[in-house]
Length: 461
Figure 1 (tube, rainbow, N blue to C red):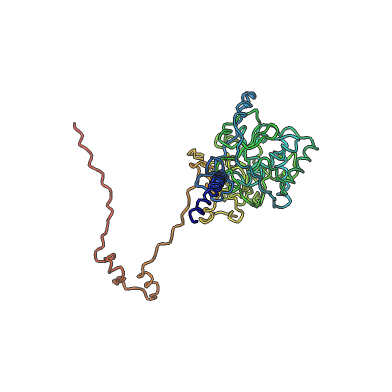
Figure 2: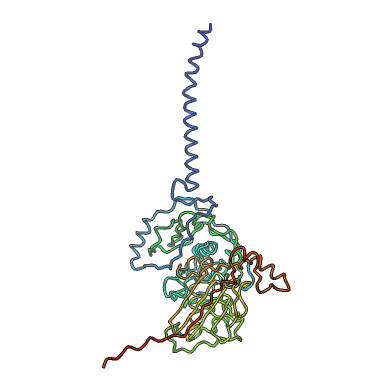
């Protein structure tokens, strides 16, 4: 009976075994697929960024080079751009940005953003919002300035190579249509209040399809909006974790180039001393600018004067935070032009900025920028606090100042201070005597003797 029972069950197992095997294979396949998806999602199996990563890598902040475009062969550029594939990695939308600032600061930020949107994309809502999103992405990224106007007008002092070409190629000489300007300002206000243009994600770069920048192949190509192609940095620096969640902008710089278009940027005091100034070091036929104590509190170039050294050759300024470091250097050189000796010390933190000379050692530790010029020796030195401006050339980094601790006192010194009657002339502090450091009976005296000229050589007859 037992044997028959066993034989009777075998056919049933034979029918079930294949089904179980199929289920096991299917389960294993699902596990492998899930594992592969997890790796792709975290950027482990490909070069795509780890979207969910939150740990900052050891790699340095990317360097932002001047934007130089070659538009000499549009057809070839379109062909080369088409050969660059779009990234297949996730493209999450940027977090909404809510600008917090006083009335003047917000007005300046709005008009700087609107100018970038309109001059770069024309009177097209989608294109303008795409450009505006790149500006806000840059604002949140550690590689760029920390004001809207600082981002938009970064490199404006160059003839070519500025970050947004309209700021240095003469395009602003064309006044926009008033209706188009109002529309752009409305879109800018919305984006500063949380509006997000999702298609470009966390893109920080873009260009038209008829030019070919050198960096096109080194960034992830994310999306095309009309004729513009948008890119983000590869690796961790292109992921959401690399961008600040929140940012407090304390002040926006006044941009002279926008003064004719924006009342918020029309400041009669801005650059009052720089008009008509000659070049630095060379061309000293120009008289030095008259900058005295009466100008304290007024704006000069990219900052506000807070102190003038006696004699008028030293200046302290509070610079606009988030401005272009190259503009700081340019303003300093122009302020010092024509002076035999000149130094400019500058800070971006209002609480740290000295209000008078001499400047204390403690204040020097927090200095953001300095410029010194000595005409007689041809010395001209520009230095940056590279913790604050990591993109500055290493040769222009300030030396980190290390406070010197006070020299410890000997126990014998402490005893002598407490002894109001003083020590006898022949007494020796016990601590010094034990160490054999003080031996009054063996004092070596060094006497200086008058110099004796060697005898004159005999003159042969």
